[in-house]
Length: 233
Image 1 (tube, rainbow, N blue to C red):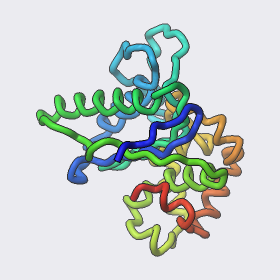
Image 2 (image 1 turned 60 degrees about the vertical axis):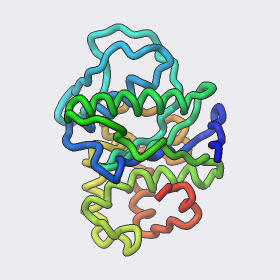
Image 3 (image 1 turned 60 degrees about the horizontal axis):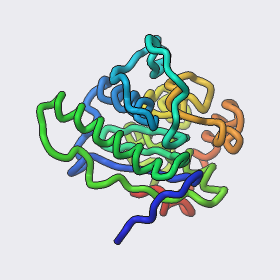
Image 4 (image 1 turned 90 degrees about the horizontal axis):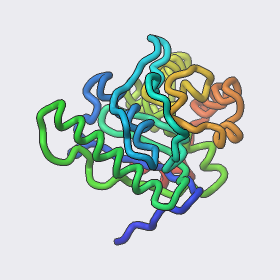
């Protein structure tokens, strides 16, 4: 069955996992490389540099500080990001014809080449082509970012989706300090702000303080019904 092409200025949830559910991030360097690739390959111009830069222990901001660059021409606006050991989630808005396709082609090939060379392996890294779902309803613009940003709870509370969260303080502390997500940026803690374009969702999610409060409330009233077709589980 032929996939429906993403449409200009529409929003999509994109997901993929490692082939045979294998881990695709084995250490911090791998996570940082993927974060950098999100930044570098979201540009219609050819990639000029393939290294990452960390500004401090508190903020692993991605950038190219030693090169003067023209304004990037985005394929997509990256609204949210979450990286997990064996999969990733992105919420994006397409900004040019075939933007999702071209961005994901560059991202998938670039990271796979890096990973295979580093770990002396061959063959596909990801489980087939990336999956994507059109995000159309206004309510989804609120609930899907929450779902994506809460994904890391699986690492410390594997049953949270079915059994709920028992320790809200522990959950929030973990999420605020999980580096491989755009959640810190949305609650006012600079993590990798150059990678995401947050203006659209900030209008919906509210100020950093409001969004943090809403996440806590969402944890207590968790209900994935209504967005289950968007979660790609």
